[in-house]
Image (cartoon, rainbow, N blue to C red):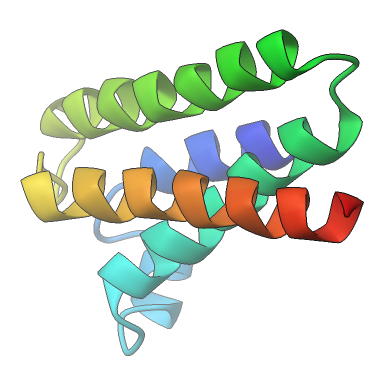
Length: 102
């Protein structure tokens, strides 16, 4: 569900009501927080470390794919800083998950 929400939110046009509603919040913060969630759940729910690592890597790839996809959406575009926020969010989410499991 979280992957769907992040994907839809990432590919909404810049003129959409949801994007306008969140325009007063830093988009880097929104990216970071969304990917914290995407990094947390694989660590908490995966059956093995290997599976968790594969899913975490796929979340980083998802961030890249969605950033590339934004180049096709009116009012949106590719930003390296967004990609960095995505990766930092996945890492922080994974670290929080590891801490919660201890």
